[in-house]
Length: 101
Image (cartoon, rainbow, N blue to C red; front, side):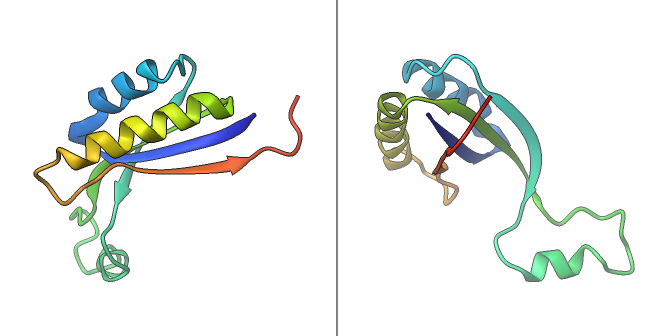
């Protein structure tokens, strides 16, 4: 079992959910996050106008699943990213799980 984490801009949320489903990953969690392209954006958030938002609305998805599902998901993400007209590809990482209950 491994942990797969996928990030995307908010507009691709439905696409990511569809990709997880196609990869037979039925159980997952998600969270809204602010994405930043560089560290300067983080500095800007502590500006004189703290109510002003500088990050991009993004989503983070994660699931504990089997290797074969992750392989399928990665193939689907690679294919999805080749069709994008924006500079906001889906990003994914895998983290091995040593122990779980």
